[in-house]
Image 1 (spheres, rainbow, N blue to C red):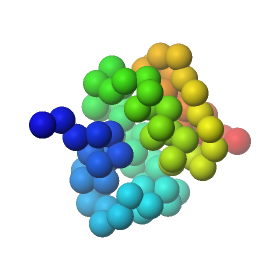
Image 2: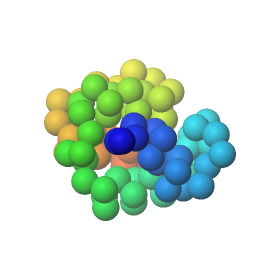
Image 3: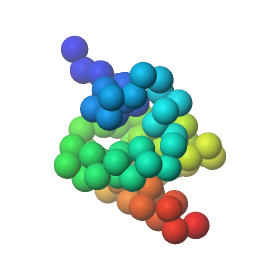
Image 4: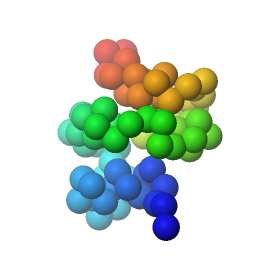
Length: 77
């Protein structure tokens, strides 16, 4: 059974709660994980949901590659 992206990230980072993913230290780790995981493994709809959750703002992307770049761009804002 395939897990959703938020659950998979929390599991790989050892987070007890999904909200733990939002801390700055984990956002950096998430970016590194996503580079290794391959953004194509998840749908655009799931990417939109996950990025919106992590960044506390509405995010809509057109491609998995764009989704993978959003976290690194957001760190510079």
